Image (cartoon, rainbow, N blue to C red; front, top):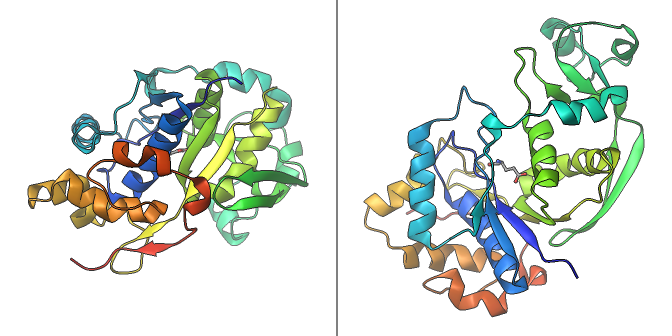
Length: 280
Ligand code: GLU
């Protein structure tokens, strides 16, 4: 069997929070248990939002938490996504819809735009009406529908590649065989799997970890600064304090570091969540 290749793919526009830590811990544990290789990839495709000091902070947090990677791959801001677009050219088209029109259609994209032959504007991927099936390691068998009224944007109006174009291109280029991330991305997995196949590759194993909610019941994000790893460290928390909270979210006993529970890691033990952080 070919070796498992996993990745940590932080976006350096927001500090690492406990939701990221949960997904990264699962990615780390799964690779270590399989004796595979773990890559680090900085997902700074949105160069406007990415910030060097946040990237430095993420590296410091990962190191402090003991989530070490084996190899760093090319960051998104220096990659060339044009070869992927070339392969997909029969499936893409420029969108001429105004924001106002899209708003009035409530997110549904008109099929007529595909035939309009626009020469500028965001580049969209034409989706078929099709069911996509995969077996998520945590969420089990999935049947998700592709819908032509949801043709996703691959290149923005300003020329920036989107997350979708970047992540699929990178995962293929990096030889990733196992993608582990938060369940908020589960709905986008169908399009990614469709793109993997259009590009002539077999998709990786997919695994989605429970969404972590803040004490206010909303998904942890940048706005929950107090649940950021850096903030917890500043308040005197140690890595073992973080791990005794996060490892049980993956169905594992609390431990000082994930390295102590590698043997116990099992996809089937991971709850599907969502999980809410208690107020501190
Ligand atoms: N960079 C993405 C994030 O931070 C992760 C993308 C992925 O794992 O597919 O949410």
